[in-house]
Image (cartoon, rainbow, N blue to C red):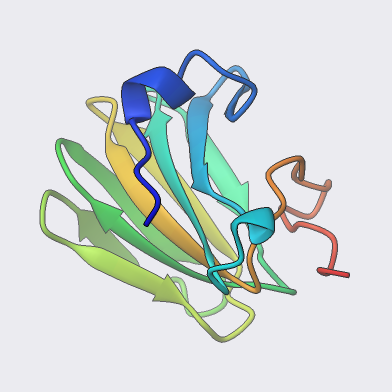
Length: 127
């Protein structure tokens, strides 16, 4: 059994930040679970472009709000507490944060935790 405390991890090397978000990497590839799990807080007003070409991702909104736009279809979806979206078709999207939303995210294949977003919004393929 593994027990992880978000508050402890938030003050460790598993917390990664940039100007628009902070991501606490609670489970990584090295934990051997077959997926990774992040808790990410987005800054209100930020606009984030993602395009996970080499990973599947599911994202669940806990508190607050945002909006995601599928850049392929131009469909917009309101993100609010209780809403999950799944990027499973090489989806290119833009996520606009409202009210500092907190999102829990699972990645498959699992991320190592040191990835940074490339210019196109993706991570490199897993090894």
